Length: 191
Image (cartoon, rainbow, N blue to C red; front, side, top):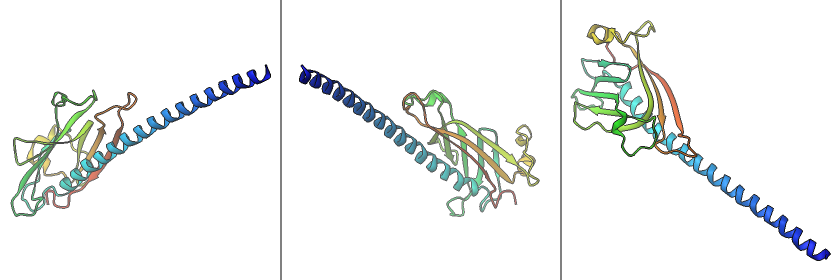
């Protein structure tokens, strides 16, 4: 009788240990998946941010023009970013949510980069929000309503960019995101 109780007790304890190990394995798998997805979002954000920083910093580079369009979700400017002696226009703008047919994230909108009025404007990132702010030489934020005039756009000396970049796929119902704020003061802008 004692040996039967020992066998039953050992079986129950073994079952609990196995259940604990299965649960631990599941939790480690979920954690690894979340870490991987977060890493992918951070890598995509790094690529998007590097692109924006590089090109916006070159606004007005080797051209007679500067910012063409200055809006809260759209920035268009002249630059000779490839140093070939020809002035190009570069535009960053927030696209429509309807453009994303294969993305599960309900908050995601495309951030486009357009070169020289081309028909093709590739998506360089998925964002929840994008905000361009424009600052003059005294550090004052310029009003969007006044930036429709070229004389007001010529006052721009710095551009503040705020982005919230998103993952296209959820992990446990949560979409990882990366927030980024940067003040860029292009050297050649409106000199």
